[in-house]
Each structure stands twice: as C-alpha cells, then as structure tokens.
Length: 129
Image (cartoon, rainbow, N blue to C red; front, side, top):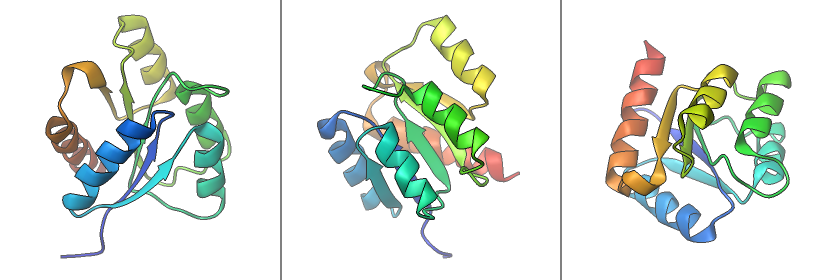
C-alpha cells in the first residue's frame, strides 16, 4: 500500500473535527484539522498538500465557499478532491458550492460518519480517473 492519503478537515465545530479526525485516522488516512478558514489557509500555505479537503460552509469570519475561492485563486489545492461537509442542504447552497467547483457535497445531518468516510473515498477515487 502506498503513502497514506491526506485529508484537510475544516470546521468550526471541535466535536465534529474530533469525531471525523478519529474516523478518518482509524481508516488509515493522515488527517490535518483546521478550526476555521484562516487556519486552513495557513496550513495550505505552509505546504500541507492534502488529497482531499473537507470543509464546512458556515463558519465565523470566512465561509467555506469564500475559503474555497481563496484556495482556488491562490492555487493552493493541488489536485485535492474538495468535498463540502455541511448542514446547509438547501439547493441554492449546493448550487453555489458547485459553481465554485467542488467534487462532492455531503449533508452532515443526514449522513453518519462511516457513510461520510465511504462517500469521500468514492469521490477521491472518481477524482483520480
């Protein structure tokens, strides 16, 4: 098996960061957690090159969509699969995220962590092709 796949997890909810960090780590991923958009930008600028970026939409300061625009503008995403992991499940939220160029959109409230893990794996696999 090759090197561990790297995940950048961006959320302002410590409980969710801890839970998903544990889930992905147990599944063999290397997880870097960022408690908000500014921290995520700092990690990417310092050279962390994730295979996937999971981000929340609603965060204080900079939203996940604004963060993604900055990541794209500054070309910090490499070839990472970008997955929105949010409680915002309205169609207009999903459309706005798709317009910025995401690879997947998962609604937290209707998805258990093991399903999130599986969906992220599928999105990453699909992105490689």
